[in-house]
Image 1: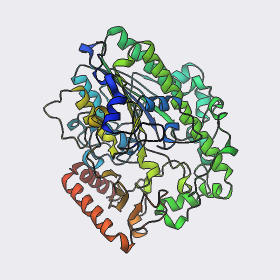
Image 2 (image 1 turned 120 degrees about the horizontal axis):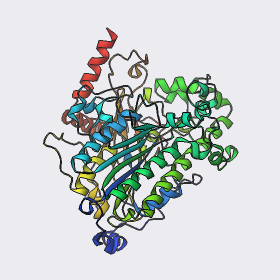
Image 3 (image 1 turned 120 degrees about the vertical axis):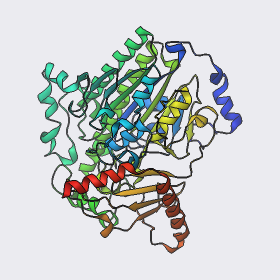
Length: 521
């Protein structure tokens, strides 16, 4: 572990001074014998560096910064797949994508009943559960089991008690909403357009409203809760309302140093995106007119600030209800966004799963009455670690048929200032498996089987595996896979990856490939 410039040095003595009596503080008993509540604040496609507390000089994230100042920020947290549904499924099951069989957004694990979803684990322990916003789990019973729910995406994807689209229609706002979504946005540059909806009409506000109503009901009924407030932003389309867009002037946006990285460096699918001049992924046009990139960054940061604001609304409600002292608050995102690094926008998950911009995610855990405050941990962490961490922190009882979890508990980092015993982190989609070490990262191309839906070309025929030295090349522009001076490093990572493959159940991945074969015949 280490600290940033604003955090205290994490020696054991100073850690105990930072935590002080708070670790031993008596928390007022509320609901279920005073068991702590859990509030997971979640975003979609948030670049881990796009926070004030992470050192970003422009992005305004007052709530995230406050959470970090009152908790532990994990600076090297990684998602298990750089796309929405697989990443969320991994987090909510505590298992790797190759085990669940969910490696792409359309995937539905063949036997969803074999997995104990996190919401069902909390229900098993007597908690009231609520999910509000973009759940985006597989379209089967893995998404179900909540006591209360409301979705902000297509209700066919997220069956819920209530949904944002109905609310828009009831308030005569649906047509304004459609102008910034779906086919209506396809003629825009880089998915960028100002929304005609006002801030309080947006899905972020709807998510916050439904979440605070749930919290109020839990306080009224004196029930411990597990609540997942999951925002759509800052995911594309980048369509902030004027209130947030006015905070960021495109002409003041600083472009990343690797925005003009040679296209030849990139995996095959990213090469195609970089050359494309057809909207809305017209990166080829943006390469000739950098103002398009600047507008994209301004709108992306605006949506980060929008999410941050409504996270603050939820936390303020928690404080007013006198629930904050006994609530563990977690902030995370399912994956990152290129934010113009490598000349890319959004995530282009179809043809890679290696870059830091899309795999590293923000992760902050705060409960000032119980955990350290203002600490930055640089141990390797995975999103699926949240599952065993919550079991460990809350002493949750697990069902007899509970699967063997893949992650590790973060409790020792939160309560005792210990570094975590992980040497490597792993992330995988159907095309590329990546092993991430303290300094080096290796991305290996995989055989995905037939993929008729996307007609993806085989990267392995055009691209070598990818080895990056994060110390000398933090922007990941120099593939060192053929560097003889790093042959020992490459061999060590390959052996560690082989060991991980041998010990990690791959029933789900095998079934996924078989299903693709069936579709192709």
